[in-house]
Length: 215
Image (cartoon, rainbow, N blue to C red; front, side, top):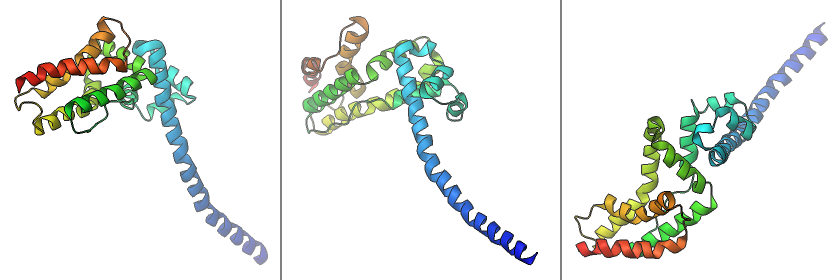
């Protein structure tokens, strides 16, 4: 009997020592799986936005495309709205180029952006969400901080230019940014044209010829 009890005690001790190891394995391997699932969900959301648009996108469809259960999505996002906003926020925005001159900064920033626009999901997702905002106040409200933050590097370019004395102190920086970005929106939404990096030089040159007259 004593030998049997001793054997049971040894087995129990071995089991207890093994438990932390199993917990560590679960923890170390669980995190990558969680991150991979998170990214798969965002990728699936962007793909479906490009294919079917915001209105037809469903959590069920995203779950199926990502290969996860709906519960996995709902543990992270309460509905498709915050999911779409986060997926959009992960797409390329304006890079904060600082080459030392307003003209060069604007041209390099816009060219990189348009290249990303044509080579990532941005080219299909951005027009889809921009159109949806017009009649979806909830989406518009949620996506506004993301859109504003993505535009901020572009505004900083004008702030640095003003500090260098390239433009007058009373220039409205937001309006100046809109003046440069405006032709892109017109081409995309009103003319149905294709955005090309070749557009950048004439757009910036023409815009700056007007802005510089205020000096």
